[in-house]
Amino acid sequence: MIYSVRHKTTYRYEASVEYARCVMRLTPATSRTQTVLESRIHVSPVPAQSDWRIGSFGERMTTVLIDRPHKLLSIEARSRIDVHSVRPQLPFDSPNWEAIRALAMVETGLGPDSPASYLYPMARTPVLPAITDYARTSFSPGRPIIAAAAELTKRIHADFTYDRKATDVATPAAASFAARRGVCQDFAHIMIAGLRGLGLPAAYVSGYLRTVPPPGRPRLEGADATHAWASVWCGSDYGWVGFDPTNACQAQDDHLILATGRDYGDVAPIEGIILAPGRQLLKVEVDVVPQDEV
Image 1: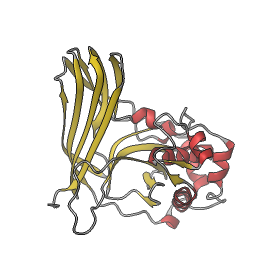
Image 2: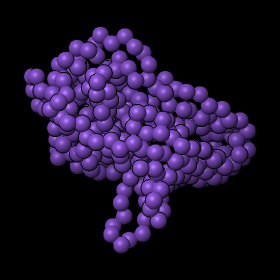
Image 3: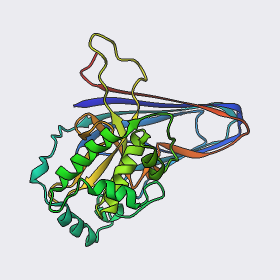
Image 4: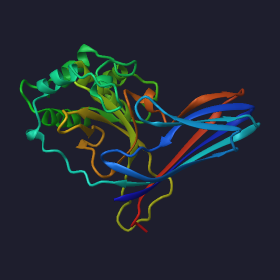
């Protein structure tokens, strides 16, 4: 399936901004499950300087400097991505989770796909007894790792309430876990924290989720949104398998990967600094449209 993705971010400032520096992770990467056919980023006002580099987890990071006074900053990323048909992995054919934990602990590779980088706690995903015990319920002794992770995915979906007002991008997993509320970012962080508490490698995936308009209704422009889910290392034969606790499913061909890291801090789509007083208004519009859809 080939998708066209449009991701537009607009900042409106109360006072004129004299200087801005933005770091963007808005260029998807080709991987085992997708091929990026084309991708570009348009910034207005035109940056005085622009460069890019590959980050620690394989993500393309574009940095721009804007030194012209402005009260509106627009960043629009457009991509065409061929997502390979991904069928859910059979849960009971995978190795048991204790064997995967043992393999991860002796892994020496340090590349972006190595499980070694995704074993340890982070500020947003600390290892806490309460979250580890919650995850452990699904990981009984000898259970296949994909079966256990799939059950944990469904339990988070059932036990937690989707609530946009309950958290923000800085909310740690401990807070959203205690409240039993949050959004996709929080549910991914909770799942990752629980898995790492059990000694299993788990990554945070930032991306997009294709939505389908109601029958007979047109697709609304800008109605989609960025999405987040967890990815679990299941050994060299299975590799990384995505699990979406927000939707109680494995990541499939309607999940488009933007960037992968240890938590949200590694993959924030846009971050940076500005020199200006006053408030700002942020608006984000996302469209994920299959190539054959009118």
